[in-house]
Length: 241
Length: 261
Image 1: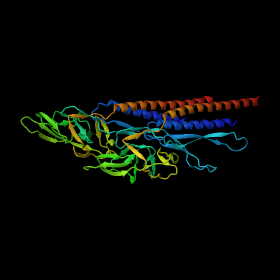
Image 2: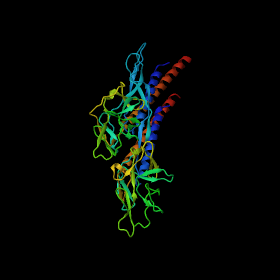
Image 3: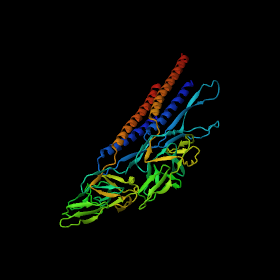
């Protein structure tokens, strides 16, 4: 068999899987705090005998884009948006995971969580006492006004961490985790903006262009597929006479 | 089949749900005591095709492949920010400034909570809400009352002919919840306690976060029309872009089937 057809197939396979990454980014265009996944194609030379002409294409997709998303005011006291780089720490099973999604919910016992994951403060999961008002400061301090009190009291401080994009990846649940599996250190320079939410950092234009270009590249792979098929057919004719 | 198709489908479905919430918010823009809903999204689980950091034969650490599966709705969230107060001048209209709810008794005897303060008097003289459910604690207005006043602390008093000082009839209470977003919306401006909302905390108006009654005023909905319209445009365009990916994925399959014909 001609080897061209396998090279073309590896390209087509890569393009179809890349499409999945971009489809996922676009589906989450409206998910608060979502970080876009990035995909890159790399070549994989097939070693061995003879002229080194075959480079199969494979995909890598485990990096997250750290570009900031658009911030919008919501007016809800427990919505926070992170300004610049940085992440909120949440509990995920036994370990820690990170998120940019600041839609903090409060449970019936006063425990704070983000999408069901307990939110971590500097002293572990944050539980608010009975209160009449709650405010989050720009440095992440959470203060509440308790029944009968005149002044706000500080309860805890959000555990805000920071890391470069290269150190981060996503886990199966879509939360951000460090690549080496360890906990990220607290960064006092991370600032939050209370009563606001950050949208996703997906660029609709980039995703649409990527989709279109993947679509056309796939068409080219299919042409090669066909070309290879007709070459083989011609060869077969030659033999059968 | 191309998985991108199912992923775009989740995106289209999510925007469909969002549009439904926006439509309901806009439809209730003039409903007294209405609290707007917000749809909360999160990304679906990821499938890890190749574990990041796995060692390949030539001892290089490879990058992994993680493919997302689309978007899902975590839930809808009622936002309990205060609505704008409209002065109506009606003696039986009350607005609540603060976080409290008025408690009413449903026909089955169970309590429900509301922020809508369009009160009425039924044929027996009992103070009821707009749907005719009696308030808790129950207050009966005498037949010959000429004026009714409701104080900031909830004390209801009536002026009756022949008496100079108004008679006190009772005191309305307010109820707060740790997590009002966890209340179940029953329709008719009513909310019901759930495991997520926490237990009701009843108290006197004017104390702490319960808030105060304002007679002669009503709390409008907290729907921001401009915000809803912008959300609607964004939802529509996101829907459109997801369908574009759907057709691109379809095109890829078409090229494939043509090539192998």
